[in-house]
Length: 114
Image (cartoon, rainbow, N blue to C red; front, top):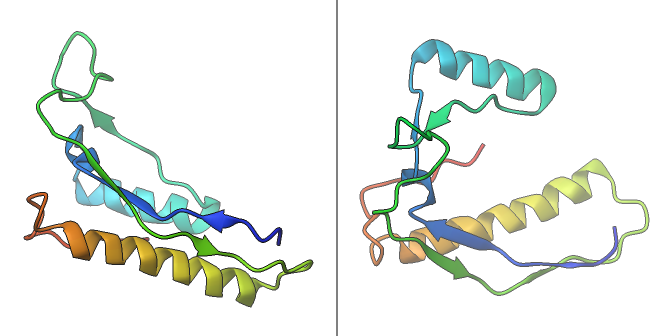
């Protein structure tokens, strides 16, 4: 709508800072809340029992930033316009991940985008 630049970025290691619940019922709850309300209920914890909100401190973090995605000035964007430019942004993030995952030790992982 306003013609901003979006800066695609991905931080390797961020998904390893916390443990998360992986129970099938929890996954169903997440998909339900995502489809009905547009959000996911987070359930995560860190390695310290006395403060589970602190992340792990043994995981290196590496942030990669790509070239900006220049959004056009569209006074009244349609849903199709938004979907088109969102897809371009997601493609840029996936390209960052695929282009650098081996370098940072994530070569065996696939990026899941909801």
